Image 1 (cartoon, rainbow, N blue to C red):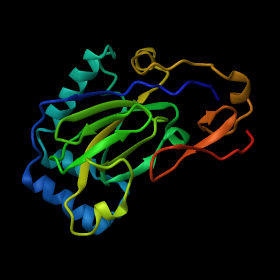
Image 2: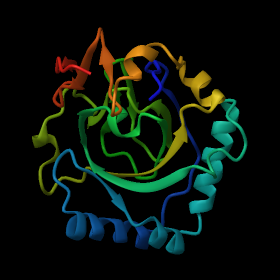
Image 3: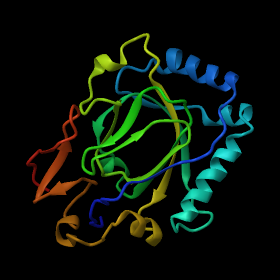
Length: 227
């Protein structure tokens, strides 16, 4: 296990991307309501293979993201060679993904229209309005949530049944140890090699304690567990 810092930089842009066809949007809505049955705060995968077949302009979205990542100094071909998924969320509680995806950075492209939601990073204070074409690159260990545009806490009642608040996005897992990814996000490696050598699973640690995130507000909450 290799130790590293949490990247403090969250990079974002609004790209010119085409709207998905109505039949694809209808597919997503049907899958969300029947197979996924999303509850407030849920984030679950959709069928990317089916969407690709029915969404010819999907390639334009991928190309826009590839162009943007290259403009950040990331190498050509990195996005195309990274694992990608299509996700849907009905809001998202405050969380970090460092315990499961600590070796990755997330590179997301939102493809839904604006629904009065923001992607909030409490650690940096950034609030990105979720509109079609919103692109973001961030460290998986950086706490984040999807909340209403005027909110700083996750409230399940903001995503009550019947409200139009589902967001769909493409997400790529970029290797955090790729030098240009680490540089873009401000990540340093081997900051606590001694502790990392004793760990058996990925985790975020602050001042010697394993940390979790308060799902309501995004504050770090030390669990005070030993390595």
